[in-house]
Structure formats: C-alpha cells, structure tokens
Length: 112
Length: 112
Image 1 (cartoon, chains in turn green, orange):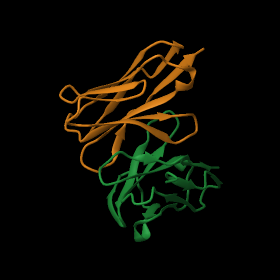
Image 2: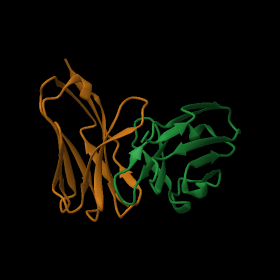
Image 3: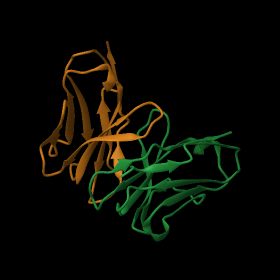
Image 4: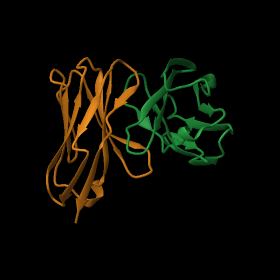
C-alpha cells in the first residue's frame, strides 16, 4: 500500500492553457474525491466517484472542469482555458466504501 | 448548508502544554467527523475518525470527542511537542461516503 499519489506535484501554466492532473488512489478503494484548496482556507469539494461512476459534482465545478475515472482505477481532472482564479492546490482522496478518506500530496497549480 | 467553524484560527503554546482545538458545525445530522493535520504546502494526514454514534476516539497523545447534539467536536493534544506544529482541520460528512465539509483550520505553533 503506497498511499494516494498525485501527479504532477507542481504545474505552472499560462492563462488560457489546458492542464490535466492525475490521481492514483489506494488500491481497492472504490471511492475517489477531488477537492480544491486555496491559501488559508479548508479544502472545498469538487466531485467524487464511486468506482467509475461520477456521483456528485459541486457547483464549483464549472464547465471548464471535467473529471474521469475510467475502469474505476486512477482519475484525471482537466481544466480547460485556465484562469488566474484556478490557481490552487488540487487534492485527491480515496476511501473504502464510507470509511475515512485518505489524501494525496496534492498538485499545486499556478496560472500566470 | 453545513458550516464548519474552527476556533481559534491560530494558537501558539510552549512545548509540553496540553491543548484543545475546537470545531463546531451547524447541522447536527452528520455521518462522521474527521480530524486532519496539514503541514505547509503538503496534503492532509488523517488523525482520527469519529462515527456519529461514537463519543470519542483516541490515538496516542490525541483524543477527539464528539457531541453531535450540540454540533461540537474537540481535539485534545497532550504534552505538545514542536513536531506537532501544523494546521489542524476538522471536517464533517453528512451521509455515507459523501464529500467532507471542512473548517478553515487552526494553525498551531509549539515553541521549544
């Protein structure tokens, strides 16, 4: 068990570019969550999957954001046409059924 | 909408002191509550999970209590050490497997 991993750890991009982040959950965890955290704030929920099904999306998840979890394994979060307001830490978590959530190290996005 | 508040926002104590961090939530119909630790620029580390039917959980020098009816939880840290310096986040889940609602955290500094 290597824990939740996220790649890349850091991403710097120019406004208007598209970016994609990857999350690999703890093996056999069927639930996967994406959160966004800005400086001085707690994480805010974006979306979550049970296996490959995306069950809930926050109103924070605008049309420019899309998430997938093919085959119920790893997940990707894509942001199209990035804006400066997208700069944040993007955190992924996984859980087994309804148990405690375990978080990855996060991907820090900076939009110039 | 569930609101989670953590008091104080920041706390500085000398090494060896026992301390209490507070968390309150507006809707008592929660499924579980989790306490996390976050080091600067890092992901979240799960400390304790309390199910709604439980009153407290203990792990080493940490003890978390839950009073669901009054919408409060406390995290007690015994014999604090400089290595405990971090931000502590409280989060509640309103249903089985649902997303977590986080407070803004308490930033703790333990001085030698």
